Image (tube, rainbow, N blue to C red):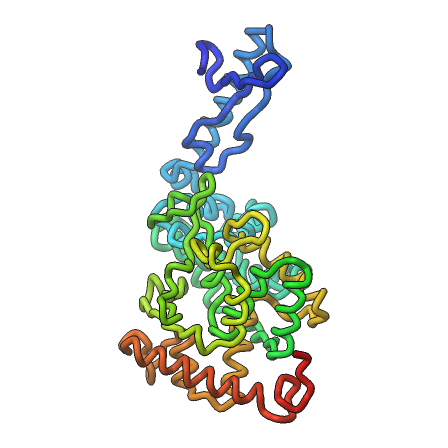
Length: 412
């Protein structure tokens, strides 16, 4: 309970000691990301004046921070600097930044912070397109070409919003930037083979992480994106209802209940959810890696989210999953250039090498093209595409002369 003169101050019971005096930020500030969320002021107990001063100071900091996040204030504070442009782009509710999914907004926020620190003080009327190519090259040298490409993409997005908002200087700099070109990122070439995948699955079990074995099998046999297998945590403020909550976060992803009695599973890839709405239908019964993992999971555990952490039984956080995957990959002796998200590329590569029909590969992967638009096909066509694709891939795996074939080289 707050007391007069000490706004935000809460008393918290402590076992075997006096109450703790803690200042707590407002719900609005907490949801917006204000720090610190709490401040222990127990050391000021007994000094009413000092408590009042400390609480007032923290309340003023909170109010100033919230005011700075107000998009109307950001727009009014635009002064032609890159910093003010980035702040408008990041905070205005009409900005394209606000339409990014949490998984996309995360790297944008990371690199926006770096751009504010490095070029925030520069004024747009003094910047040329050549200056930006120079920044690109500097970032590429220090952090790699992917980081440089992301920074340029953010600058372009911020300038485009500035042009739409008729912010002075944005149109001229955007025009100058359009006149220069940047090197394209080379496509990733790393794609796991069935041997890589089996080694990772084995290492996942050996190290006590069967959930990663299951996720790897689903991504590879199912040609599914990683985040469509393990799901995604998003802020509770995001649209949509979820029954899986953790504080200010909620989870969306596949559940055991989505698998029908005939072992078919329907997924709507998150990448196409807001665009084509393409759905993918998978027959898990023709996926040997997947079925092998399902058989290892006790029936009583087959409920709720499909992939959960092995200790907490809660859905994986994307970053934590990738860290653990790297550890398992190393334990498996698989090359470090292979990423968790490369499973899908390996699946499509295996299918192409096995002679699977391109249309079937596209349907199972949820791709759309001028020749085959997955969303116009009925359920049976999707299931048959998966069955034909998997039949071709498994036949190639088991062909004599391959490490996983029937020539005696199979460890199992």
